[in-house]
Length: 413
Image 1 (spheres, rainbow, N blue to C red):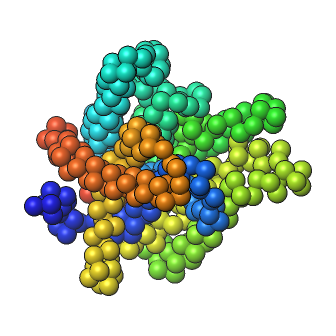
Image 2: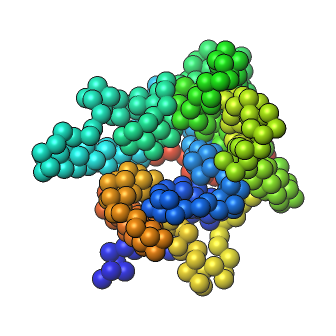
C-alpha cells in the first residue's frame, strides 16, 4: 500500500538520466545546506561543503537549457515568433510552476494566522502590501529578500526570466526578421540578456562604494536576469551545432573543465576562504568580484557540464539493479516540491521549533527533516503538481519535442 502511495511510475517515463542526475544533485545540495540549521551551534562546518557548487545556480543553468530548447525549437518550427506563441509559452511555464507555489504560499499564510489566533498574539506575517508582492514575484525585484519565505528569491528570478527572454525574442523577430536569420536572432536574444545583465552589475559595482558590501546581487531579479540564459546558450549550441554537441571527445573535455572550474569558483566565493581575502587585503577585490563577474563565471562553468550530461541518456545497469537510478529519477521529479517545502514550511515552521539540546538531538532533527521533505514532497508532486501539469496539456498547445536536428536542418532559418 505504501509503495503505491509513494510510487511515481519512474520506470515508465522517458527521461535523460544525466539531466536527472544534475537536477537531483542541485536539489540535494540546496536541502543539505538547509538541513544544517537543525544542528544550531553544534554544526562545525565541513571543508567539502565549500567545494560544492551553488545548487540554485545549477538549477538556473539546467532550467535555462530545458526552457531554451523549447523556445528555440518552437521558434524554428513555426518559422517565427508571435503573440500566440508567446502566450502559449507563458501558459505552459506558469502551469508548471505557479499552482504549487501559490498552494504552499497560501498554506504558510494560513498557518501563521492560525498560530496567531491560537496564541492570542499578532501574526508574524509581513505587511499586506509586502505580502501582495509575493503573489506577483516582486518580493525581490529590486532589493534583497529577507524574512518571510526567503527561498523564493530564486523562483522570482526564474519567473521574470521566463517573461524577459521570449519578450526579447518577440521584439527582435518583429524588428529584424526581414534582414536576419532566425539563428542570428536567437543568438542576439541570448547575448542581449547576458551582456545587458553583466554590464548593469558592472556599472552598479563601480558606482556604489565597496564598503557597502556585496549588495545581495545574488538574489535580486534586476541583477540576475541572465541567470538562466547560460543554459539557454547551451540549448542554442545543441540545436545549431549538433555535430559538435554530440562529439564524445568535446563532451568529456567540457565535463572535466566544467567540474574543475565550478569547484574552484565555488571555493573562491566560500566562507572558508574569506579570512584569506581579509588578511591579504584582497577583500575589496572580492566584493567587486562577487558584485560583477562571479555570476558570469559560475554560469559558464556549469554550462560546460551540459553536453556530457545531456548525452548520458540511460542509467548504467549497476545503478538500475541497485535501485539508485530510480531514486535519482524520483528525486529529480519531486525536486520542485522539495524546493518549495524544505526551508520555510518544514525547517522553519516545524523542525527549528524543536530545541537542539545536544548533538544527538540535532542529528535526529536532521533525520526528521529529510524524512518529512522526501515524504511530503513526493505527496505534493504526485497528488497536486503532476495532475496540474497534466491539465496543462489540455489547455495549451504542446511544444515541439526534444528532437536532435540534422546538420543540414540546423543551418536553415
